[in-house]
Image (tube, rainbow, N blue to C red):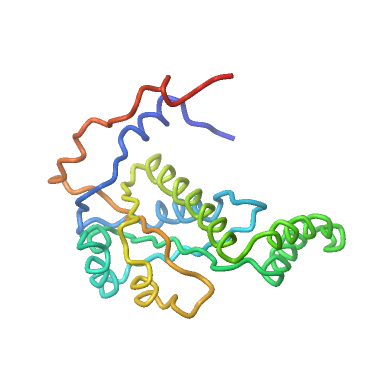
Length: 215
């Protein structure tokens, strides 16, 4: 596997910031976008259950409806791709069985041999009430969000994570209201506008020694 130099990774992460103004005239090309899309799909999750769905909004008509339900922030409309990360509302036996079947098919393993793993996952889920399952699933979504932003930065693409959205309103606009998923957080993806002064602001971080402890 080819790897990038550590300095290149840090340069990309120092370059990225939460973009406030996107250049509405620029679009992420299809090859670059597909790499970012796969970065989301490849994100890790507890047990590998992937309790999420990524709604990618590129339709100008739909994007135009989003600022009003995003505290009047313009990023969802001006960006190239507006990604809405939606969480699976529950985790039931049927979903786990479909995941086990997927493992069997992908790795050419008999389903019967996966019975202990299935039992372990079911045991974990059955110990939690619905709200705990929803909270657990939501935490997984943020792992995918982090991977999305990091991958984009390495590829020279800007992002803005957005918790400032009306989840229920997003569900209505995106057709999720009666589905197994609901909107948790958004991430605008595209290219910064030259007028965005935030691009030149120094990053504010506590000292590494205050945040990282070795034992």
